[in-house]
Amino acid sequence: QEQLVESGGGLVKPGGSLILSCAASGFTFSDHYMGWIRQAPGKGLEWVSYISKSSLYTNYADSVKGRFTISRDNTENSLFLQMNSLRVEDTAVYFCAREATTNWFDLWGQGTLVTVSS
Amino acid sequence: EIVLTQSPATLSLSPGERATLSCRASQSIRRYLAWFQQRPGQAPRLLIYETSNRATGIPARFSGSGSGTDFTLTISSLEPEDFAVYYCQQRKDWPLTFGGGTKLEIK
Image 1 (cartoon, helix red, strand yellow):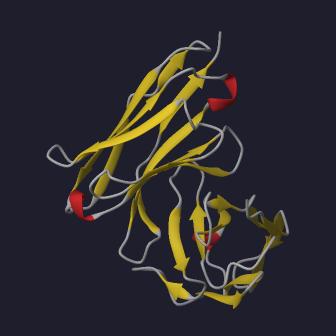
Image 2 (cartoon, one colour):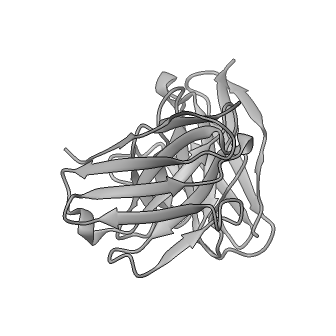
């Protein structure tokens, strides 16, 4: 069935780096725009980043611009989020999500927890 | 940035009752609004997109309405599995933004 599985989360010190991955299966990954959305503990949802099917277009929330980089490998059906200069306020569960042909996020992974703490 | 304000923050109802959740945008977003349901420990699930279209597999008891700045998600008769947190999201402008959520709890 259609599935997204995130990995790569963990504990990192402020100023550190981490790479998140999202493995897609059960659908044609290259046909879809993809995004990352995060949720701080006990808080609401915050959109983080977005990438087009061919990687030509990317977009970022102001809170992560210049520190995070989204990328994808259509040959490996994978989405990535390179996170640098991490801050305590980046602590959250990070979800990858597929944008449907309707232009809404219709498939979400279960998320991976990133904890930034000294 | 378009701010989405959801009300109430918490809604206490009983199974079988009708639930009405509100989402107000800080400026017109036409009909570019979606609703998501999130159960504890789970990922969000798309319920409604483009204000009033049910996503695949979503029961008919869920409906959406509105336009411009005021939107409503209605659950006609609550089932036990409907008690969760609900978020609205707009895609009219970047950045994409979500509302703060409405927690629907069992009374």
